[in-house]
Length: 170
View 1 (tube, one colour):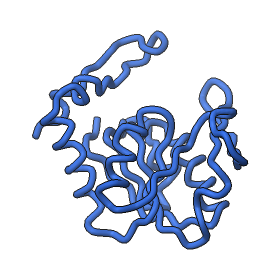
View 2 (cartoon, one colour):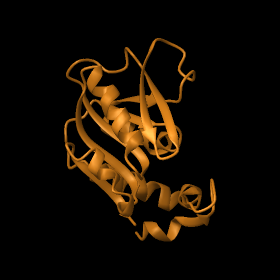
View 3 (cartoon, rainbow, N blue to C red):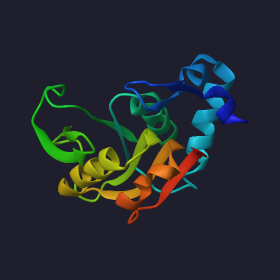
View 4 (cartoon, one colour):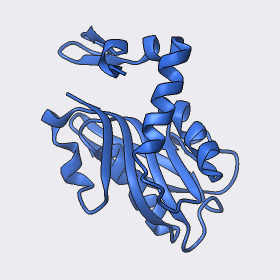
């Protein structure tokens, strides 16, 4: 399937100069949605994974689907103040400031085999912060999966100690 045909460019969103990769056309099409979930699952090559960690918010679309296909648990990583129980935080730098992510302290156990999933790998800050949280809790990152990788932003360089796979590259 040509996944790129279901991803549209939205210029100047969320701010001027950014070309946003909008996946809503893909999500609205049942066949494309199913094929995408299957293709993301196929990127795992049968690896042993018992937790899928995905980042807010678009990572929450395919993260739970992958967890279900793997028979694994799903763990959300969210912005501060969004998780109701005890959390661990990681602050990271952006080109225009900082951001913070949180994970429940009881969501990853020592030795858990973890898949990190998000919709887009751009500059790599969100993915790196998420990987740091998982490792601080004792999890072992098996692979980082992305629907889209924006290769020109070189985000993979921040997480290149892990296996990285993307369905679509720009």
